Length: 185
Image 1 (tube, rainbow, N blue to C red):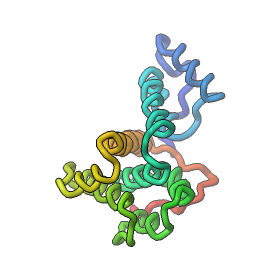
Image 2 (image 1 turned 90 degrees about the horizontal axis):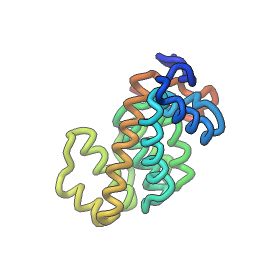
Image 3 (image 1 turned 90 degrees about the vertical axis):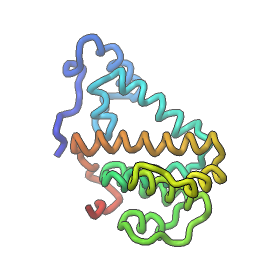
């Protein structure tokens, strides 16, 4: 059960209500679920985070498959049920194999992966486990994505770690119509 009710215009500070109204208008209604439902408690921060999200999701040089894999690595590393549920099926649709998605979910040995997949998995898992990245993992990711893409990849994983922090801290509810089994934690 979520720890806070959804934000309302009246629950945000007076000086931020115009930004709250702008977000609600852009989204076509109040934000009722997901990390956005937490972040809108600080409308200006939410607005700025949304700009980064929009770039990473719509304008990034990374393929949808790589984006979804990065999101799943961040979700699993942070045991974030909400993000996992939101992206596991999308990852499969983007071209990730069931074997890979299931291995990440269950923390099992990775199946054979394409070089771009291996670069994402190794970079993300190393960082989330040790808070550092080895030269080998860095160079493999750099070869796959170049400077620009690697910068976007690390920022994307960091952004989804930020979302996981919010989702887990505020205990965001999973949707009733979820498609994925919960993460074994």
